[in-house]
Length: 467
Image (cartoon, rainbow, N blue to C red; front, side, top):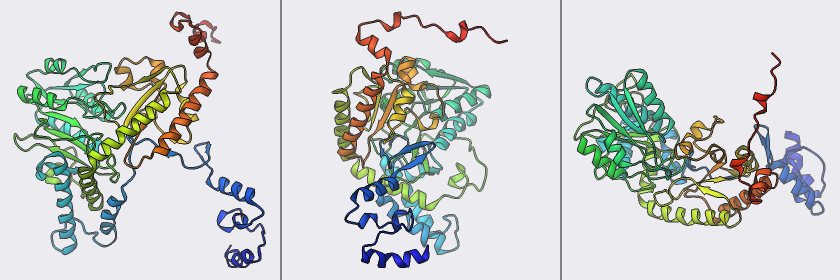
């Protein structure tokens, strides 16, 4: 291979086209004037890849911003010095390396706090929103277990909140799982009625990760304040996307994540109100970092990146929101203008515009996703995507099972372009029409046949068993 690399410049100057290696870096096809087709084929072959048995022509365009966002280059610039030269442990108190890392952590803490209207002393760094939700839900209830035995939450919360509540139920606590309206919003009157004298926590997600609906946080916070119950919100999908003021909204605890706002993965923050003070039982034992709330060495580069992401979001939130609204409308109009029988899941009025969740009737969901190999989209939460069951969030909205199976979540972000939206429209419309052309159900529906009147025979139950 080394000999080939030394000979390549000479071969190129002579215009010769030997077959030295299949690797594109050693191929002369791209510079041979009489072989444009070979060059194109070589380029296409180089770009093509097979991932988990699926062959795709190249990296797909990315529209799954609710799962994660790319790191903003400005965030990466802020982080790099703390990997390369300023790498001290922020808890080392005896030398410069520790002092400068500690100062960087505190500066990042102030930036996170500023974005949500909090005091920096109310921000505790964690590994992410999942850990924050566990500390908030389990930590509050265990601390006040002697007099508070009841939690109120909704059926559409993130899985880590729901699982934390189920864990508490195993310890003898009671949990009320409130239903939501068909638009995904909680009924605040029903929420108020659900609060009991022994209720220790109300937990309602700010912006839903699957359908993007924005809950009435200020109204919920006012109710909780009147009834003397701490209000926790999972704001991982809301931070930097909608304005948040913890004091105005009456929020007592809040879970935040960096990688949803163009920051690094692996770091989050818990907001914990100081006045009136809310106490939690730590969920991790160790060196007592983060004032005993979350033990473990604070990862300085990640925290610095989180702070930088929050600072950028504070400056660009309005612009990002307006731009996402324009692109969302472009995407919706483009698909709806060419395909019928589409349902928008969740409220359009109370919604973050970077999230568009659509269900396509008469289309098999898995086939649709597999057909959209050139677009990175999701059928729901990345944390539950391993399950073949329809989205529990959509089922809570009253979406029928067959329609819940056909949902696609399009995520629009800071770096999404109009060209990418137009390409997503083209590919989605093509795949939906292709699948419907093969669907007898679509053909019958267009012929005016009431599909609900058709009796489906369950052959598994009718067929005699071998046993």
